[in-house]
Image (cartoon, rainbow, N blue to C red; front, side, top):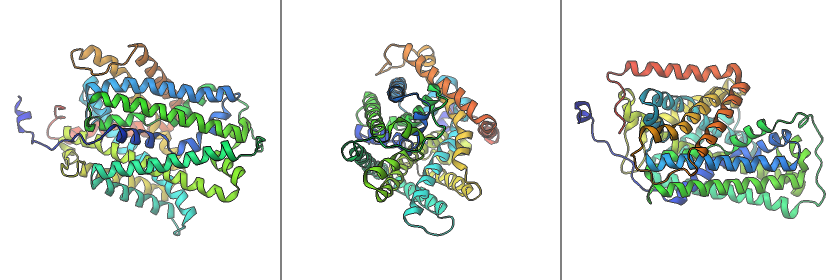
Length: 449
């Protein structure tokens, strides 16, 4: 054992307290968010008819399942609270892994929390206005409350996630039931716009895969599952099947009530559906459902985001305060606090700009897809670099499925760069700033345990 490793203090580590139902609730909760009430119209506008529309959602499920199987190999071979950070560390070394963790802590994950909190705030002020800047106040309050819940313990955080997920799925079931059993027989017509005149199946897939995004967050709690590494495989596969089924059914419902052109022309597809079925009062229900969906995704994002920050603190002495685990509550208290502070600061930026949602997407999407591509490649790299490590689960049809996963990630990286243009420079700037942090540390990154 090296002298440096001997000097490192013994730190409390995560305990195995989560079951398969906890993992499924987290994945479904983080994926099935506000996106399913927004993106169907964009997908319809870029597809030529019902068959192509349904095919994109089915293909999105298949690609997500392929990605999940690739991730399942990594999580079963290297279960670690660091998730993607840990996989990148093993495949490419400490510097690239640190850059990912830094980008995730400073913009990607905290930005997602801030945006989800803003979505809740936007709908909350419609239900109960609280004066000027109400959206910001609600958003900050949500971050504080959800962070406090998770600081109280993993059990409370996971139970809250289960409750939110049940409420969200129940709400979606009501929307589906309204469209399937109470809608008028004739397909409704929404005034046509220019949407759908220039079809792009590739762009439709970009929106679909963005709506499926988030299943990989389960990697950050792979070290905390009770029933062994292979249980993560079951949880991820089951979650993708559930999500794909939900998406296919609700999109069929949208088409049944509004028609393909109606979905393509709609700015709030679920609200338009409920308006047709049960009138204007039912639209308020959609507002509540979107708010609950935002809470569900925000809570799951807070759980997983803090764990990657904790892993970073374990390896970088400069940020060592993040690497402390509260054994009693089974939660990274300091990592949760720092994450909340950064997210609230990003929320406060909403006081000065109202296009924050688009701006954060512009800044973060290329960075996210770049690292996502590297994770896919890491499956192959680690097979070569670390062939003797036990792999309780191996991705089937290797290397075909990992290559498909990499190709889909590369296409989304290209699409995000094409879409964002100069906006991506901010994300690159954040990464470059991260390069300077280790220079202020007395020692280099610690050896990852």
